[in-house]
Image (tube, rainbow, N blue to C red; front, top):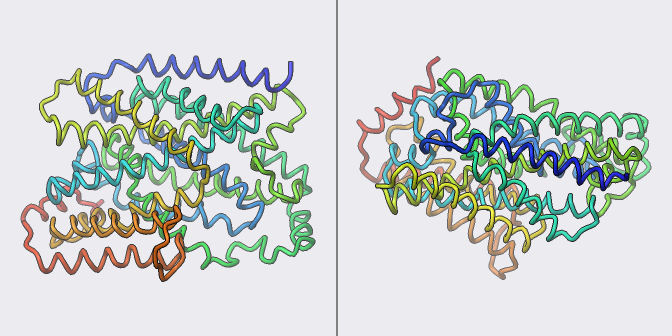
Length: 483
């Protein structure tokens, strides 16, 4: 029996196991139970599901390819932004949990007003759709390379597997399956790191190969850092306010548990992203040119032992799907809770709310799949999706915790600015012939986007009225500056 046949068998077993877990947790009583697991999960488990949702899938596998080409400074593309975002979340996590809201838009509505909360729902929905589509792209290419099937078939198959358990189990099902998926991917990541290290000959061989190919600064951490600042700024700020992370913070038992979750995650991310980066660097000795299907799928397909190859394949597939399920669940929360229930039909029964939540999950998956079938890029699309949050939502959200003079009018119009700014650049990235003073996805664009949002927010706050007592009460309840 070859590795492909074994992989199919293991994948079926995995799907049955994960689907069983999802169905087991399908008896959700209300929205808080479906989306936050009734806030009864321990900090360590929330940390694992948080790590699985960020480290798994697109970022880790894509980082291997970038490290193969660019070397150690590739850590700045994903690793540094993750640490920046996690560090910021450590500061704000207690305040987010203390406020006790089910979702980000509900929090924004409490701090500003109803229309600002609704506009944030649109931002979250856009980001989660693009982010989920990226994971569909990754799983589609992974299945395509390993099974020698079409990309379209692989994308549909991967999306269907995720829906089997996330559709029914809600956040509780996502958390439990994330725990299993993290273990699978961790073992697969360790094996690939060890395999590339021993097969390549280690860092000495990497340095010699870099000299041979004239790759200047390949082993330098700080080489051409300014070229990566666009990713640090945009990914770091947008991931800090990523709704699926706030969902996990809100699911913590207490504010202190939320801070512990972020601390555990910050510590874990350092070796995990370094391991992935060095895997790509070691692979530069094994593959002179980047394989068309990527380093990781190519290595897994070439493992000689069928049993090991199949196990690694399932482990990596699990990691990709763990990221996808988190994005779908959070996007569904924005669509069902923040848009449908809060604005379209507030008087819904608990049974209807659960039904709408599941329909929203299905709809999110269908739209993400459609996007993935049309666009097959990863890094640039991911950056564009993050730019919406960085330019439009970062300043109003963060300043809402810190500055009581920030007004609802300032928040609303700052978000409209971010929406227009990011949409303009998105249109250019798609081929629109529009004037632009800098490159799309550049450091200049990132600085102008977030800098313009800050200036607009502060200026409008001084020019418009605000309910200072309400704002002070919100900041006092969040209490992020005190232990």
